[in-house]
Every structure is written in structure tokens, then in C-alpha cells.
Amino acid sequence: MFLVTGATGGLGRRIVRRLREQEIPVKAFVRLTSHYRELEDKGAEILIGDLRQVRDIERACQGVKYVISAHGSGRSPQDLDYRANIDLIDAAKANGVEHFVFISVLGADRGYEDAPAFKAKRAVEKYLQASGLNYTILRPAGFASNLLGLAETFRQTGIYVLIGDPKSRTSIVSTDDLAKIAIDSVTVPGAKNQVLAVGGADILQRQDIPRIFGRLFNREPIIINPPLVAFDGIRSAIGFLQPQTQKALGTLRTLLANEFFCTPGEVAQLEEMFDMKLESLDSFLRRYVGI
Ligand SMILES: NC(=O)c1ccc[n+]([C@@H]2O[C@H](COP(=O)([O-])OP(=O)(O)OC[C@H]3O[C@@H](n4cnc5c(N)ncnc54)[C@H](OP(=O)(O)O)[C@@H]3O)[C@@H](O)[C@H]2O)c1
Image (cartoon, rainbow, N blue to C red; front, side, top):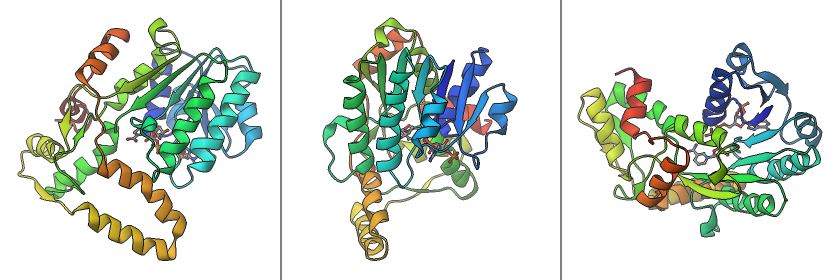
């Protein structure tokens, strides 16, 4: 039995779907307010709870062989990216879980001081590595599924807003590939107790994204490119009213200001380890936007 947290998220939903396609039993940890009907229909066992409640986490880990931690934090990295994962690791250990897969983030080890989510991820990575559990830590680049909404806006308007350096590099990863890698990590021998960077097939510049949209929808992109200082100005203004939001925006700023890509060597290693060919962004989008 797998336990998947964040089961209604962009990644978690794909993990649960894939497990159920293979008729593998899975408990989907969801909130009462989550949209979980599809997962239930596919035969997932639904565990309703809140990851901020340690009792819910302990209940969820009972009878579980593998845990995939795929929840996201939104505005509360301390509660969800950090505390919930520590509780999950403790409960996994207490219940004799055989393998724990943690979805971290590319660059978690770079010491970004202004990025609460990155700091939390790094602290959890260290805790998991010292826990005695078998683990795989996946450090993905940005998810292709995040771009589906932007693609739809582009289809209608031709507009793409790109904050910061258009030439900075990224390896957007197919969220479906990442779901497969997360699941297979518990059985592929080479993935045991490893920290793996996960990116897509290509290293892109951020300005390539609207160009790919342009090719897909056969329309010339209108790129609106505010500099990072404009973001900083807005962030400071928000800080006067909502200091917590200003702090949380540090993670977004870190994402906007830095490069997140995998080397060709890392991509080749993943492809060999998981016996797969990683998908390009172009291919992912074509599958989802129906072109
Ligand atoms: N997105 C990216 O580009 C990216 C890149 C690198 C790493 N990651 C990491 O990958 C993981 C998955 O990301 P994602 O984009 O798939 O996440 P997501 O779409 O934002 O989904 C977040 C999930 O966490 C659940 N959740 C939030 N608060 C909860 C709570 N208190 N109790 C129970 N569940 C709660 C949400 O449930 P509801 O449906 O109820 O809201 C949802 O299922 C995260 O750890 C993220 O940090 C993401």
C-alpha cells in the first residue's frame, strides 16, 4: 500500500492515477475541501485529514509500505513543507514503512536564505537522510503542468508575462515523468538512498516558453517582460500590509532570480536508471492542449 500526500495536487494526482492504472493499492491523503472525487472513482482509498494535525498523519501511515510526500505549502512552508514532513517521517518510521520518497526542489542545497520553502525542504532532506528509513529524494525543476493555465491564457490573448531575465535557464519537467519516477523510486535499486535532480529533456531559456506556445497555437507571442526590481517593489509594498506574504514571496523571488536546470549528464543518468525517455515541454503541452 502506498500513501500519497498532496494527492489532489498537480503531481500527487498524477501519482495516484498512475498507481491505480497499474491496480496498485493507494491511500490518498486529502482535505475535506479537496477535489478528490476522481481519485475515489479510480479506486484510491481516501484518507481525509489535515497535514497540520499529527494525529491525522499517524492514522494515515498505518498499514502503509511506501510513502510519497508530494504536498505543497502555499503560504505556510513552516507548517507544511517542514513540520508535516517531519511528522510524516516519524510516523513512517514508527509504522515500519519500507521506502519514503520526498519531493524536494532543485536548488534545495544552494542555501537560499530568502526562500522559506527551499530552507524547509533542505532541513527535511537532512532529517530523512538521518532517519534510518530507505529513501529517495527527488529535486525537480519547475513542473510542466504549472504552464497549462498560462498556455490557455496565451491561446486566448497571445500574451506571456515573463518577470526577470528571459535568458535564464530552466529544465521544465513533465509532471507525468516525475510521477513515474516517484513511483518507480521504491523499486528501482539505483534510486535507493539517492538524491536525484529531475528535469525535462531540454535545457530551455525562459523566453523559449512563449516561443513554444507561439508554435503550438500558431500565434506571435507578445512578451511582457518586467524587470525583477518591479517585482521587488511590489513585494516591499505588500510587506507594509502583510509581512507574512512578503516573506513567503521570497521563494517566488528565488525562483525568478535563479537558474534551475539539470545537466545533460543528470538527464542521461535518470533515463538510464528509470529506463525511460524524458519528455520535452513541447510534447507535454501538445498532449494536454489537444494539438
Ligand atoms: N510546482 C512546481 O513547479 C514544483 C517544482 C519543484 C518542486 N515542487 C514540489 O512538488 C510538490 C508537489 O507540487 P504541486 O505543484 O503538485 O503541488 P500543488 O499542486 O500546489 O498541490 C498541493 C497539494 O497539497 C495539498 N495540501 C495543502 N495543504 C494541505 C493540508 N493542510 N493538508 C493536506 N493537504 C494539503 C493540497 O490539497 P488541496 O487540493 O486541498 O489544496 C494539494 O493536494 C511540492 O512539495 C512542491 O514543493 C513543485
